[in-house]
Length: 343
Image 1 (tube, rainbow, N blue to C red):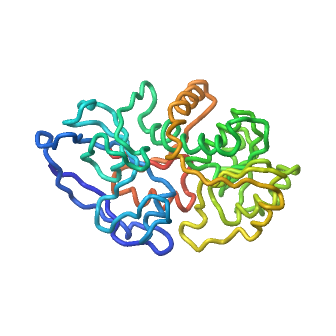
Image 2 (cartoon, rainbow, N blue to C red):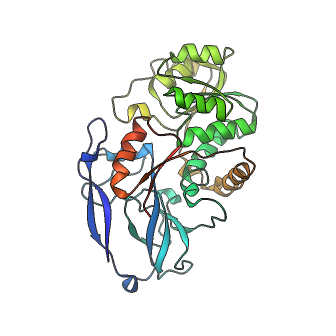
Image 3 (cartoon, rainbow, N blue to C red):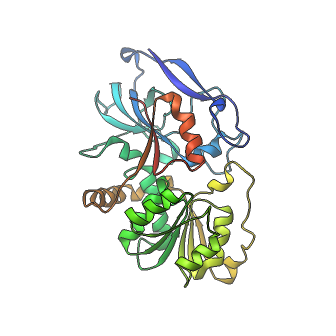
C-alpha cells in the first residue's frame, strides 16, 4: 500500500522553514497483510506543537521526548485518524482513534504499546458531537496540559491574580478560560493587537501586547498589587518579569519556553527573587498527568456545551503545509491550536 510521510531533512539552525523537511513516499502493508496486534489508520488531523521544535535539534533536552531522526518518519506526533483495518482486539474499521504516528497520511500502529509517556498510546475515542480535532486541543493533550498546569500551580482553586503568557496559543488560550471559569482574575499577554483584542473582547480578561508595551509596565498597570500565579509558556524575559511582579509565596507553572526554542536562552537574571519571595516554581508536562484526563475532558466538554469555553484553531490543509504551519506557529502568526487537516 502506498502512502506519504513527512521527514526531517536537516536540523534547523535558527528559524524553521520548509527546507528542513521532505515529503516522501512510503510503503505500508496492505490491509489484509497486517501483523497480529497491528492497526492500519488513515490519519485525518495531525498536531503542530511548540515543543516539537526542541525535537528538531540534533539532541533533545534531557528528560524530554527524543529528537526526531533525520530522513525517517516523525514518531511522537499526536494525531487523530480512522481505522481502516485491524488485527488487534478492541479496534474495528471505522473507529476514531488517537495515536502518536502523525505527520503522515497513514500509519500502522501497534495496539497496547505505550507512547509519549502513555499520552500517545493508541486509543479509541467516543467523539459524540465534538469535532474530532478537539481531541488534539481542548479535549486532548493541550487541554490536559492547561488543566494539569493549573492543578500543579494552585490545585484548581480560584480567587487569585494569574498571568498567562502566550495567552492566544493552544495551551495559553485554554489556561485563560479555565482560570476565568474557576474564578481567577486573569492577566493575559500576546504578541499582536489582534490577539489582545480577542483576549480582551471575546474572552473577557485583561490583556496586553508584549511587543508594544514593556512587560514590567504592563503588569504594574494591570495588576498593581502583583501577581499571585504565573503560567509560563515563554520563559526568558517573561519569566524574569514574572519574578519581579510576583507576590510573596507566589507560584509559577513552568510549561514551556518558546522564546528559547530558536535562539539562545536569555535568563532570567533575577532568579534570587524566588528565594527572597518564597516562590514555588514547578516544571510539569501534561503527559505525566494522565490521571486527570477523564476529569479534564468532562469539565471541558461541559464548559464548551455551556458556551463558557471556545477552542480557536488555525488550520492548514495537506501534508505539504505542515512545515509552514510549524513556522507560522513558532513566529506567533497562528491563534489557538495549530492543526494540519489530512483528509
